[in-house]
Amino acid sequence: MTKALSAFLLCGLLLLTACPGGGDSGDSADAGKSGSTDIVAQTPPADDATDTMDTAADPVARGKEIYFGTDYSNTGLSCAHCHAASPEDEANGKLIAHTGYGAVSRGSWKNTDQAMLDAGEGRATSVVDAANKCVGAPYMAHKEQLIEGSDADALAAYMDSIADESAWDAAAFVIEVQRSMPVAGLTPDMENGERIYENTCERCHDAGIEGIEELHGLGEWMTPMQLMGKIRKMPDWYNAYEGVEYASLSSHSLDRAVAWMLGSTVAHAQEANPCGEHNDLGSDDHTVFSEDAMPFFASDILSDQDVVDVAHFIIENE
Image (cartoon, rainbow, N blue to C red; front, side, top):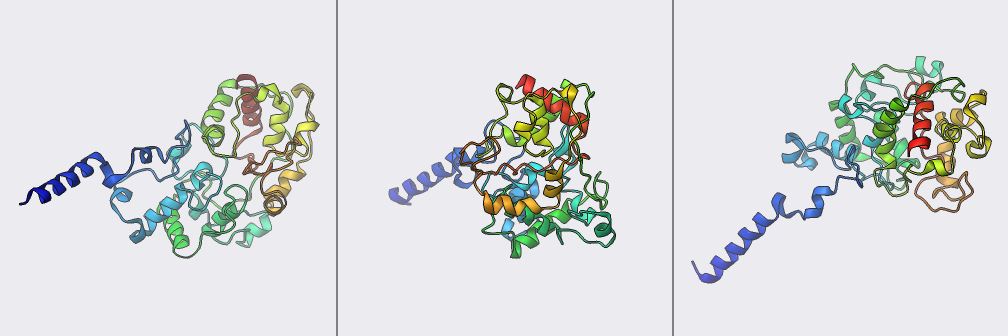
């Protein structure tokens, strides 16, 4: 063997040993983390199946990539930020949307009334169609390219692979809309509020996602009443509840929340206000999200008590 060939082989060996994983840079190890929070990675959790298989040849692996990744997102949000892929994803917390692992078994998406449910109809005709509602809406703001073709088949295959008939929301249902602010008289439970904040709100708000503000310091310019109004999608939540005390709270219509749940505000938010300018506070911030971007927490996810607890915890402690 010549000296030149020996030197070439030695350099190649050094390169391989210096770059584990076939030459990935050191930064790639943290690519799935968002800021200081890694509750939901932007890449699929590693396991034996996805570590060794070529995702192009394995639809389930590719579907998992789509579900946990941002290939179809301009906001940094993935399906997994809002929809749990397993019961473990929901440990100690309440995600903003219904389970991903219960979706296929449910067989019904975005039903708006009992008649539609009885007829087997919904606003989305399949799990992938339901996913594309989020892809095209301000949540993921990727209207220029929806999930189609082989990627649609892959996502459907992944959703089938995690389907669980025992999920709490696996049965077809009509989304329960809470039509009023939490009634006065519920004593805030700070321990429960902290649990919801750390395992629900922080998945997005403290995850370093561009366009989503952190919640620290809200108490300097917002009251618990205003935050409850925002969570429940109350009309003019900032001005309507400025200076209002929780003890004097009365019930209010949730027309805006009902419209949101029926899907009528999604197109408006995307077309008329795609960058979030002139939000309810009158600011000119050019953020990724519109004011309506945060979905409405249905009351089967956050109860009145939960809303009271988390709003008071955030305002008084963050």
